[in-house]
Length: 270
Length: 270
Image 1 (cartoon, rainbow over the protein chains, first blue to last red):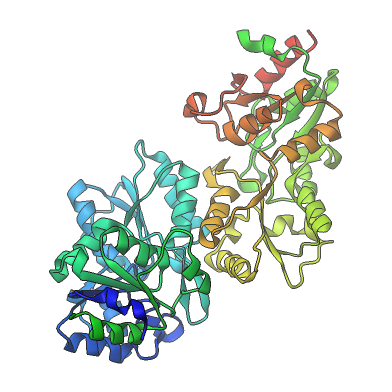
Image 2 (image 1 turned 90 degrees about the vertical axis):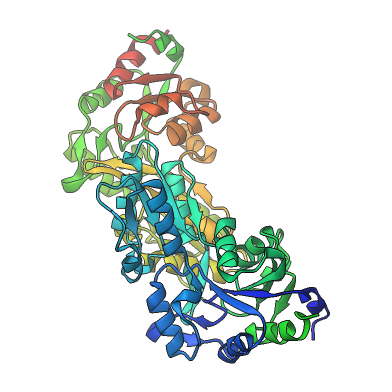
């Protein structure tokens, strides 16, 4: 058992990333990561509070949860903090009418949002919908605005599917930022507001919480900047060079969620 | 006549950008910019040396020159400095075998290049070929290399077609740079090597040359950093905010190439 496990003392709540920690997405819905179904079940039977904190922006929460339940996970929509619903709140608060550069799978999350005569662009992980035509349309909308507003659901560089590494929304956000000479507002990890809303929904303070994710920057670095502890799993998009990242050092590295849960159940209560 | 025209004294050679200065590309090949066909002809009848210096990377030089001749321009392939042939020289010198993320229209420029078992990626203005699948393939090639090399033909933000502003290669280069955590090598404007090769081919020193373009950063800023003078035309992708650019100030702003040539013919010999 890792010696740094003692750093988990006093943890009361656990935020779990989904893609790369619970499952790898891909053809046919994806595959669960070995040991993770049982690990989530053990966490939920423990005294620890659990919440799922994802940057998934290609699927609606309903679709995502349906898929995970099909893979054997005990999870419901109400337990998931995701960027699309968070973005909808912001759009409503600020009277923004988005042009949506998103995957069809997440469009239902924006069903109640006015998208006529757009005064901003919302970009999500559009996958195959990141065609030149769709990117160019979003670019043209931004260039026609006096004060262009670009809201990006996450800024991930890539994620892992069963078929290999896949470009994530962050790359395309950078493209639009550069082309328009603007800076996007990020909704999702590593935005502090996003982590804070997940903590609030779980009812746990940052110093009592641990984030478990496969993204050294978005999950680990982001959570640590909010005062949380954070573990990186060696699954999903993890690469060995992450453990020598020049700026971010996780509180611990574990082979998978199962090992993280072993350590948590052993040390959290102390 | 603009008072700053006197700054053109001593000019012996003129580098002309093509897209946005000679013509706007678009459906059916594009349209010439008013007055530019005659302006090029006047320049060529003068004592000034003329060379065309373009970042066009969607079409081969042969195709581009054919199109311009069809629009009425007196131009030949040998007068054009373009990034694809410059990139081919670099690939050969360094033993690089590229994966090509380029438009089919420019592929012929790379006919003599070994593209088997790629050890680098060359990205050009691929237009509609910037699909998610093609971007992702280039990303995966880079991520599999121990020392990923990305060569970008220009780093333009956008250009103007008759139908509106269009995303240029620079945006997609930024996307790959961010996703892979690397920095691209730029072949084309504003790379100093590229301007220098154009000057050399024209046989004129930098301090004796003026660049005329519609891109305040790529044309004007790049040429000035090489010791050249530079004019921006108010055609093509020009936007009024360019005249208040925070970092680059042109030696002069002209309504179009015709006005630039008027000034040049009046002042260059003095």
